[in-house]
Length: 421
Image (tube, rainbow, N blue to C red; front, top):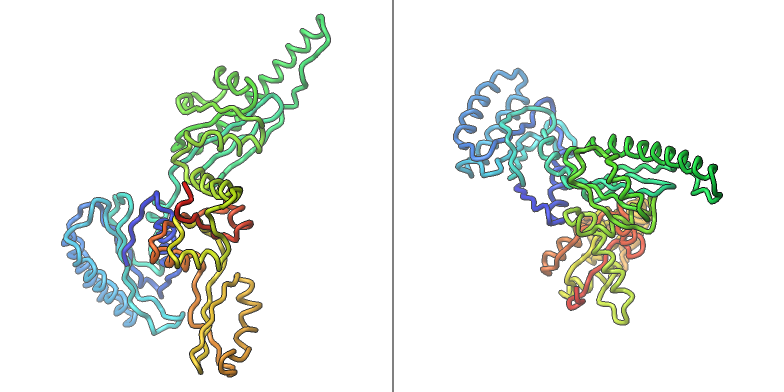
């Protein structure tokens, strides 16, 4: 099995995650699963020579079954490596091992996978374990685009960190500073001095928390400082934030402060945050919402409608909730061959599916119904879209717009061809 990853393509990222999850589920007995990481441009002949030595060393393993499984895994890895002359510019990863089938012992099957990393993995490693070693690949999936958001006025503030497709940290503060004093004279001047001291303490408190949070992310690409009125400019000009952030600050006007201000700031700073996947997803769902308000909307949603339009080649771009949590189940009568398909949630698989299987076949009347295929609805839609040449955008429900796609549109909606972008 081979996998390549395009970070801008949500489907290939989804498939890469799925492959890693599948590899993570594999478990051998003892140390019968081997992981081989080969750095960029390394001659494969060097690796094969090393594996030959490991094969010979494995002859000393006392357990006959373990010895056989380890040597078979090494030999299978060698055969797979013979497909290459040298590792490519990003390296090569091979997994090989004796994986018990259906959880049984003694009925192991050698499984081999190879992965071309999406980015260079400068690691030379051979490891035998009961699990495949996947940490370096998981690190590649970690979202690299990180931004900070600080929204502030003289009454409240909020700090957040955006990574990839979601807000990963969020904290709010209130100032406790009273409004401006309206009386005149010495009392007013004294009050204003105290108020300015309180504001200064408040700014320092917000900055201390913001610095503590933001400095945890040395890869941070930028920081949005936003809010209504001049407070944000004063906060930036007086240098309350850590000096290392000075060249990363982007000022944005918002109508709100606090948590509502964070959502508004992200929306108003879309150009600044253009590399952030969350912003791209939010824009797609907002386009969907705009299209639905038109007199003749060029969109389709709902399982049956989406599938019909997809198979007819009518959909330009399909939006799918990544965590849809639904399955497409095909049931067949073993007596007459009649087939029927259902879409079910995880709960419905437990509650409704046994009832359906217990009923007689509508065509022949025999109680011989059985499940012949079960597939996640996301995987099913992706396969149908690939057949139709339709672009798919997977949307996380971790943000507000993504949750709207899942809850209001059933997690699947398509822009019809000619919708106007």
